[in-house]
Length: 430
Image 1 (cartoon, rainbow, N blue to C red):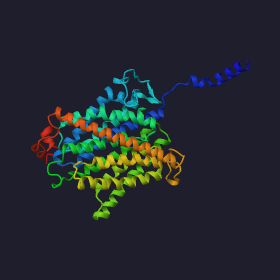
Image 2 (cartoon, one colour):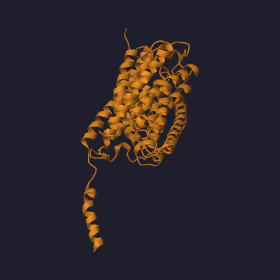
Image 3 (cartoon, rainbow, N blue to C red):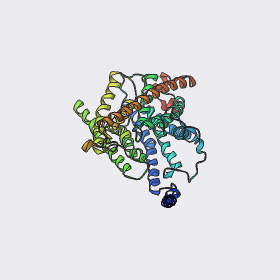
Image 4 (spheres, rainbow, N blue to C red):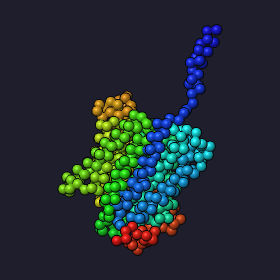
């Protein structure tokens, strides 16, 4: 009799939890709607203007066109199958086809406490900007047809699987890797693919002897400002809620960007006697990319160190790759995004500790042994992503070269400029 009473008592007080179903949270939904728009702003027009100002005037339209076209291609592919490959149940390596064409998804379908259609759209904006970042490596010399084909294939066979590994319940997620907003998923994959692109295509005609200076730094600074603002949605939105995690992610993002910009400018000031505008905005992007994987796990003190580290490490990486190795990564995608993503992913494993005083984060509190364990997981994630991305990107470039009868435009077309030869237009009628 006592067992029956106890059972009835337990059922009575547990009924609300049984009856309660996941419901839409209006505040969280409103914030992620805003964050989604901010992340799209990073590509269109942010990245387009940032990259557009950095190339020579004869190639400005080609960069803008590539950003717009990749946004369209990536969005359609993400809707058709990319989202399913990234976030379908699948296995440890890749998602399944259960979400192809958003089958079964209605206005009422939720992902947590926001509409799944919104979660899918938010993730779509990440899928848009990641292959768009790569164009900075092959700017001014790759055929438009090859750009479209490579970007679409790369999204499906590199970006979607790595996204599943980290954010879709895959093997890195199961290991407990820290990547809050895309250090591995976005910056390492794009950075490594960019380095492969630069090596496969070879340098632009005249590199490194002929100066290839930015044609419009005003445009670049405008785009950089949009990237800085948009990054609040990139990192803050990755909390998927309007809460303290989002607020702290935005704060540490801003601090790291500020520290990265000032550090890069200070190095130039010390070395060359003047701080350049280009250096400041590049340092800002380095700070933003480096804080991205750590933004949900570190505090303000850790973010300051991460930003300063980004300015130093990315500056000297850029100099080494371009001037020592003479690799023509046109707009420095690998040393800024790739190296920044690697550095930030590694430092996330350190500054997530809750036992570092003013530099503490919000991850673990078990001391040095746990720090070593987390850093080991971070290194595994970094290494696996670099190897997979490098091999598959190389194979894709070779495949696309066969399909388009060569990746590059001819020497004559390159000298004339891609605006005329690829699009039959000019950016400036002056």
